[in-house]
Length: 315
Image 1: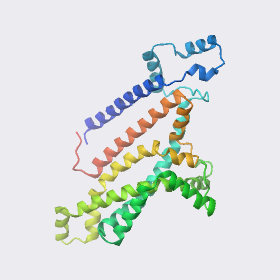
Image 2: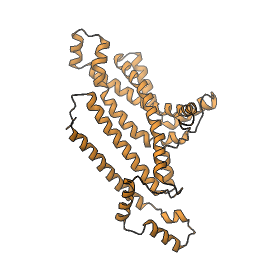
Image 3: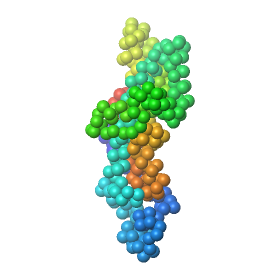
């Protein structure tokens, strides 16, 4: 992989984030919200509102406001929340950490289960094992998260009393209690991921097992296990990297239902609260942080692609 390609990708990430910052700043400017009114209240005098707008630079042209905001972002200052009066950067980054923990645990569980299920379905194509894996996959795709989450809480929390129903405990505060609170949301999220990835692994592995180089390896006398481990899986699992990278983006903002049901203060939930409260700095910070995380994850996925398959040459 050439250094020029890495540099181009890094520049593309910077360009993408710049465009995202323009879009999110423009959108927040047209939202029906007045920062001065939200901070001082609707009963504030006109003089007080005008003075606050002047001090916050809200009377300046939009491009001046954007340049000031972007300059602050580049220095790590995402602004102050209109709802709480606290800096939004640390709050959103802390929420991002919770969402990433939930995402990576879910993806880890998904990989542990989905890859073996996909392999079993592929090598047992058309048999009972394949049909069972397909059935599980169809059920997982068909059930929305709010249904699975509700059933999980009713069964494992209300009925069996095995796990806590809601809440979030930091790992550094109480590791055992934290894991207990994460079990249900991680399992709920993993169900749909397992369904998607197991089907993809099955489909890709079936295609690879019917290629000429696999037939040649078998004709040389290699055992089925050796062919599978050393030749088939390496190529069949490459598309899984792309799916995992896309899933991280989905998990950051797409599991707001799960975060809401299980009361996990992740970045998706924080962003929804900010939108409902018309908290413009929090909206801007949340969207930009999510975009940056998604861009970095996709960059890492491309690097892994080239590392796992030496035939891929980026230039």
